[in-house]
Length: 358
Ligand SMILES: [Zn+2]
Image 1: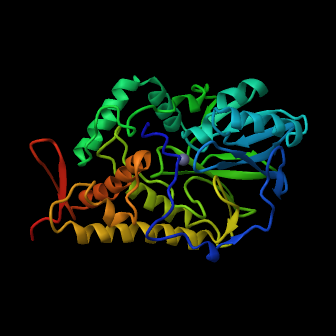
Image 2: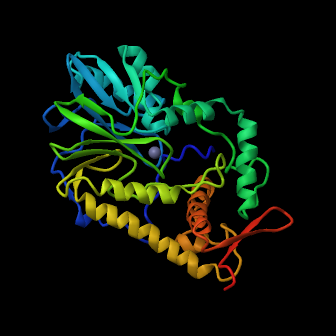
Image 3: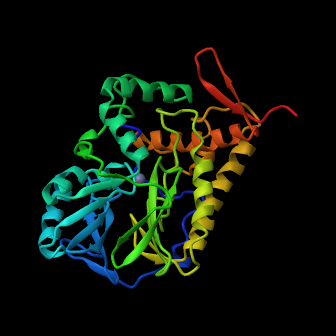
C-alpha cells in the first residue's frame, strides 16, 4: 500500500487518550442522510469508510443560498451512497457552493472532484496539499513501490518482492485531482455557517493541513490535527525521508493552544468535544514519552525496525507496520535534528541510531 493512505490513524498505544477527561457533546451521532445541528448554521454529517477507521465527520456550513462543505469522504461507493442520502435530506435541495478540504488524505478529499462537478462547487484547499495530492497521483506505481521498499530497507525491514507493505496504493480512493478554485493561506478568513472562521495552518500529520477557528463562538474544526480518541499519525514518508514532521506537529499543538479554553472541537474522527487543552497536552505528552523511550533504547545502535517494540506494545503487521516505521522514524529524525542521536549507515545502506559518545 501507499505510504499516503496515512489518513489511517493509529490508537495511541503507550499514552492512551483520556476520553474521560473530555466532555463529548451530548448529541446522537448522525447516520445516513442526517445532519445534526452543532451551532447556528453549522451541521455535523458522518460518512462511513470501508476500512478499520470506519467513518469520517464532515461539517456543513450555511453559505448564502447554498452550503460550504468541509471534507468529503473517499471516492468509494460506500461514501457515494451516503452522499445521495445527504443530498436528499441534509442539503435540503440547496447546492454545495464550496468544498473546503482540510488536507490531502483520501478520506478527506477523495470525493472533492465528484461533488464539485455535481454541484458546480469550487474546491478550496492549501496549495501544498493540492500539489502533494497531484504528485502522488502522478507517480508511477512501480516507482512508488520501489521507493517505499528502499525506505523500509534503510530502516531495517526486510522487504520481499511483492510484499503487502508496498503492493497496491489505493490511488482510486482519490477520484482524481480536483481543480483548485482557491489556494487557501494561513490567516485568511472564511465567512460561512453564520460565522467568520480563521484559517490555521498546522503541520506534522501532513503538509498543508488546515484547521478553521471561529474565535467569537469558540469552535475549532480540527481536521486530523486533533482527534479525541486516537493519536494522529505523525510519520516520515518515503517521499521525504529526512523530514522532521514531529517538530511541526508539536509546534502546531502549541499554536492551537492559543484557542480559547472553552473551545468546542469538531474533529474528523470521533465525536465533537470540549477539553481541547487537555487533549493537546495529552498528545504532546504521548510524543515526549516516545522520545524518552527512544533516548533510553539507543544506548546501542539500533534500526527503526528494532525499536518498534520500544514504541508499540504490539508490533503492528502489514500496512500498519509501514505506518509504525514512519512514526518511529519521525521520532528518530526529531532526535537526530536535535543532535541527541547520531545515525550510522552500514554497507547495506541500513541506518542505526545511537546516542553520541560523550
Ligand atoms: Zn489525515
